[in-house]
Image (cartoon, rainbow, N blue to C red):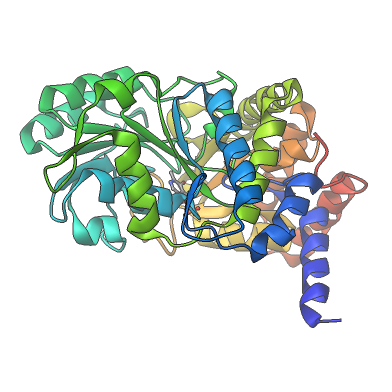
Length: 421
Ligand code: PLP
């Protein structure tokens, strides 16, 4: 047997024994994995259902159509493209559809909670476009909508981005839209992180306000790794889109063309099948219970952390994640991430707003509850987890303590399947 399968088993053990707190991760069902590991991986299908550049696409046409229809139903939207291989590629397609290289964009600063693809200098978005950004208020940790409007009116970006990778509060999409309308900008929401909660109406909906919406499918949405583009109710009809070349086209046509042939070749139909399975699961009422539990767990964890003297940026969470500012604890994000890994608790170091440390060191960690909720953990477990994290932080260089915390972590997770909700 190929050694790769030993490594896969080793990784399964790691995932099973540990507490997974990475906010962007989750555990998919066996059915999602079955779809991804299927013969659909053998098929080339450039194009879209009914309009392919290869023969033999009758079956994958049905697969892709099902994925699209389920996503439309789940989010209540009119247009969906399920082909983007990743969140970043869904985002790249938005840039290609809406802008010309050199155009100005405005997103949340990476160091304040934004994503690389929202204009970071090391990403194509920051290399090919002119970037201005908004952030959060130092005192509250909340988005400074007044500052955002002020910069937008002064700089007049062509596209405004509402979305984040590390912000624990809901977004005021109506406010973003007001500002976008004042300057005639396209408003794009990137709901990669909270998509599963948005789908179940547990957070504000971007669809009635934003011209285009992208997401990943593997975070709170609990599907295979991948991306997706959506468009809300009337935008297809009311938003007569001028392409960067000056032609007027339907927005759906422009977006489809931006994904293929714009930035991708053949779609991954096995992953699209996995997306269809995950959307089917998310349509079930069980997923609503799951999504509510993700949110309750995040709130319970934030409270339990605050009770132990941790500073949570903005003082709490509305979604599945939180940023812990470790500066009052005398440790940095890098060493904390490392010590937690030794105790079988996985999370990532993260810059906090107005951080004085580099992205390699950071002053914070980001914690999320999507994955541990799938494993079946509840509010009372959040207190235990906060206590374990606190023990690690207070004993960051003490191997004996880290080993004893690891034992407690393994005991807590013993007998719990990866997919348990
Ligand atoms: N957009 C946001 C807001 C994200 O947080 C992420 C991933 O973390 C992405 C896009 C990119 O997704 P991917 O890693 O699939 O490219």
